[in-house]
Length: 158
Image (cartoon, rainbow, N blue to C red; front, side):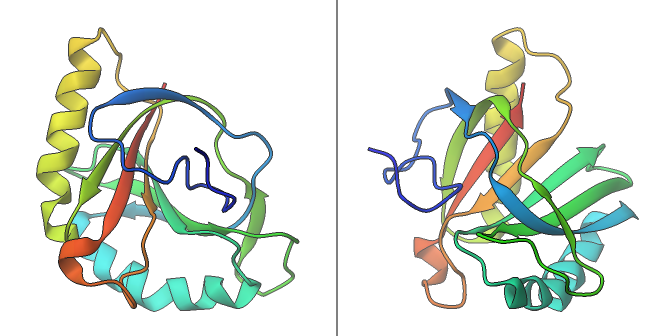
């Protein structure tokens, strides 16, 4: 069963790494942050998701990570939208398409590191190469869902 909200790939969590086709032409608004470190993420998310929310999202927020997340990397955060925006500092675009390996993490963001390790181990065990990017889709909203009930879908773009 597929959700009617863009970027929710299915209602049920992906308890095992599963290869999926990402939807085409999902319109998004984004903000890009080059050469950041993990320690920068709370400030980026807390300081900018509310600005992106002014573009009237129609689905969950996401982050696209490019580069080595153990060092400096680029991150793009955004939301799917029905219409482009002209808000200053916000870019219009489309969500990445193609194939992805996806697995859900249930619980707080502090557990994402171990969930990513498991997904990347599975990806490489299946013969996968270094991914072009990885994505987190924040399926549940941390401002309205309890910490232990959060769901984040992790995607390795193939």
